[in-house]
Length: 271
Ligand SMILES: [Ca+2]
Image 1 (cartoon, helix red, strand yellow):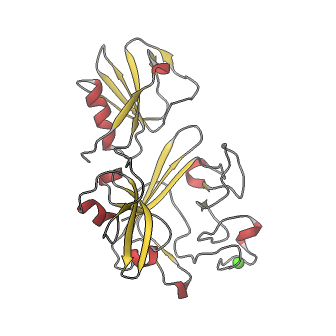
Image 2 (tube, rainbow, N blue to C red):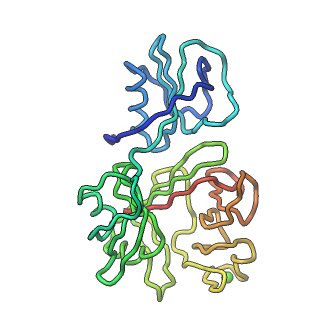
Image 3 (cartoon, rainbow, N blue to C red):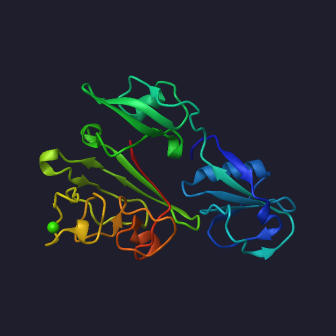
């Protein structure tokens, strides 16, 4: 369990509505505040409902903002969208840190863009998530080789569909191979039901074909660079559509949405 600061916003669309879809769990809580705080126990929790009449608290893996109201009428329910903690209010923040873990240990507590030094002669601006699952996450493809060299890294991928549902995939044993091995992706165990299926592959781009499939995954099916196999169950650098559509070249994760439904939000981060 993490001790995380959260902000919540009342969603009056769902006043006096009971919902059972997208439910993570239901429990009794002493207050709406305690109900909101319980959301921090689960990485996929994005909203809660609290019934002031009998103190039922429900947690959901979906953000219901601007969604069609579904459910049944029942008095006492209030709904709250729950958001991750502090976002930095200033621009890029200079540090002497090697990664976001060091940024956090140097006393920073907001998520935002920090200048870090993955190795002595490399300086990068990266997004540091200092909130999710205890923070310390570095979010950026570049410099991953240097930062994962020492081993023992975790990889966390957070995804949101266009109708507001969140899910995550979490791996240990994450590191990126040397450029002479075409930045091969190394992963070991996965804690969720979401499999990736492309561990062990080299990184391919439009002009460099390192995928084991005969032709090129990019541009035959895909548009961005990724660790393609033949070709993929997941493409997190696919084309960004502005709605949820089935498309081969979309950014998608098939074991989450089925087929190749384009995703709204993707965070790929490690520590
Ligand atoms: Ca190929």
